[in-house]
Image 1 (tube, rainbow, N blue to C red):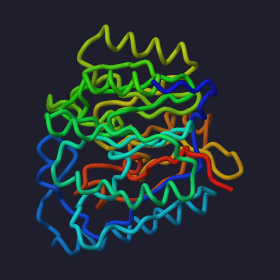
Image 2 (image 1 turned 180 degrees about the horizontal axis):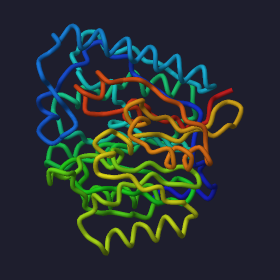
Image 3 (image 1 turned 60 degrees about the vertical axis):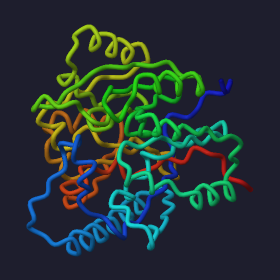
Length: 315
């Protein structure tokens, strides 16, 4: 177990993103990602070109709001349709730890890039690496901060069990990182397991966007919501219909001036009531990215595109 006596900050201003060169519909991930849609209205080339434009526009919006964005170019020689979602294969932590994760889809495992880790090592204090990816050989998966919603200050990891979020791996991860777990089962409107926790909840410093309707066990729901209350989080509930509009897939951050922001997509924003918007804005400023093509064909929204960097920068 890694022991870090200092409290880790809850949010960061530095994000890493991968500019997609091969973005498109992934048949392998569609097996358990109900958010993906492939209606054949656009060619593969059109989808890719539109996704790149959405990505570039989104990066500009984030930088305009004072966030530090490291953009890594996609690997031109390896076709990775989902490389735009780097938060699934690695996470960083303020004690200098980097964790690499096991991925459900075989074609997504190609997204793990040692060259990106080398860049991080060159620019940040990275002292320790935890390798979990060998679990893929045994059919166990844990997809980074898609599977894990981290309350870093309180050392609590929330997770929705699914084929992409294995219960035993959760325990191993928590032991290595020194976290408590808040684990639950949740299903979407069609009765399918919610594949990633980050499509149904997002944590801010003092609030949580929470799709509690999706939980299938009342006792688990009570236990999780008690944790929210104990850690000072005001619960802002979202409906099943809003979950389907990516209303849970957002990320709380701070900018270079220390201002609190929450990043969400235009799709998510449009699903909120005025009361919900007012409650969110009482905690932080909303930053919107318009990424309908990425959401439709990739089945993920803005949070999935953002890998948080918590490592200390070298002088």
